[in-house]
Image (cartoon, rainbow, N blue to C red; front, side):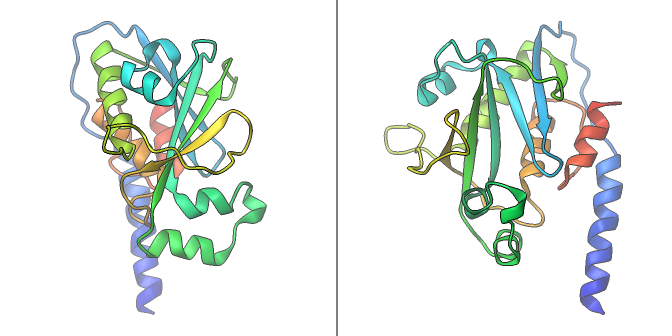
Length: 205
């Protein structure tokens, strides 16, 4: 009974805090930059055009200027590795990700063109700088201040995994990472949104 009550409270908080927007400061600047948000229905990624990436991200990820768009996602390492498709999802992997302290990973994907289902967000120069810094700080770094690449295969030839800071949980999901990135960059989003719906709701308003 207690467990059912806690689950009910959790989902009530999800609904309320997802629908209410974060406090966005008024910025007197030209929205000359753009980013994109992509969703597979459960997980969100942030996509930044190559020309809007910081030098540190370009250098660490060794990105060619032929790759026009770079996608960033954060999540539970074991979940990423063991669940390439949703048909691979198991109860044990989900339980460990939500309730046990585990390592996280950054998932980086390269694209040569825009997809029609991406959601565009216009923003100012200062906002893209803040977003770059948030993403940079999500990567775990070695003693030489370099990102730590994980020696595993991606889902395709255009994506890679890196060690990340933080631990996934029912409170801090992959989508909360995206939501915090947007809030940190003064982009209107949910107060808290562990699922995709709250973030997409505010983007599409």
